[in-house]
Structure formats: C-alpha cells, structure tokens
Length: 252
Image (cartoon, rainbow, N blue to C red; front, side):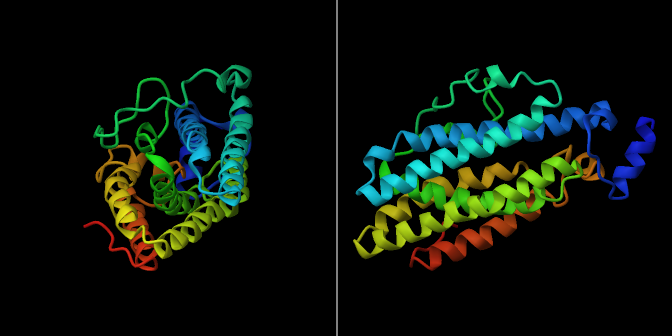
C-alpha cells in the first residue's frame, strides 16, 4: 500500500495496527505524540515525587506516592509501544533530567525544552503541598480532555493504551479535588486561589497555539480529532467548574 493510499484511508477514518504499514510522515508524528506523553508523565511524576514529604499526613503521602507510581506505569506502557518502532527503551528512562525545572517566575508559553518532549507546564517547579495539589487538579482536567481525544487516534494499539490509562488519570484529578476540599475547610482558600492563578495560564498553554500549522495535517492522519482551541475551551469549562465547586473563582 503506497503512502497516498494510506493517507486517503486515514482521512476517511481508517485505523492502523502495525509499524509495518505506517508511512514515514505518520510514523514521525505518531512518535512525537507518544514521546510527548511519555516525557510529560515522567517529568510530572518526578516533580510530584519531590513534594511527597511535604504532604500533611500519611494518607496524603500514600496517595501522592501512588500517583507517582501510576504515572510512571503509564509512561512505561506507551514507551513499550515506541519500542516496536525501534526506540531504545532500555536507555530512554534515564536519558533525560526528568526532575529539572525552570525558575518559578519563568514564562515560556507553549515552548518545549531542548532536552525532552514534555509539555511546557512540566518545566515549572511545584511550591509545596497546596500548590502541587492545585496543579494536579488543573492539569488532571487537561489530561482528561487530551485523553478523550487520544483514545480516538488512528493507531489502534495506542488508542487502546490511552483507553486503559484514562480512568486512572481521572482518579488522580478526583483525588486532587477531594484534597483541596479539605484544605478549603482548613481556611486555605486564598492560597489555593493564588496557586490556581499561577497554574491556569501554564496549563492552558498545554493545548498549543490557537492556529497550530500542523493541526490540519494531524487531523487528516487521524492523530487528532479536535483542535487545540476546542480542547482548551473544554478544559476551561471543566477547570472553572472544579474550582467553583471549591468556592474558588477561576482566573480570568
């Protein structure tokens, strides 16, 4: 099957199931998508691991440790699939400084770093327990939106992995919401609001620029189904609702 035939097949909603029938450009974009997910999960877990010991109690530390473990598990599942495309998975996990962060007051928009493919939001440091739980809530809602789209990707083995991962990622956000509800009862609403104001634009940038030039090509290949702007709007609604349920006004 030549590339044009495959392109037409994908444009009509077709699915691919093996590296053997994947065209070169599709392969490159598919690997970028997988690498971005793996690197974001690895960087996110490394950052959250650093704040486990700031948790206020054993229950919170156990939950945080489980989140770190599960995010690495998710990365491992997608990385194994990358191995089928020739990626050296044995070296991958130790090839990047996952815990490395920029200064807190940095503002890089949607720009990724030079050492890996993590989303820009994972280049910023967490500032204590409250801040980490706020970030986990807002980014958790963003991951929900992203995974709903990723479960429809045209590479069927990856779509299946994302479907398996999605319930656990939703649970992470639910844990954050429960934790923040307790913090509100403890009188920490102002601290939560301040952290939300910090993370809101940084999580929003995870959906990319409004008019990304690659968007149409990715949609034609079945690697995206909604635009970044559509997903960002969906996230804003979910995140705003999550904060309102805590009695916190979402940033403008």
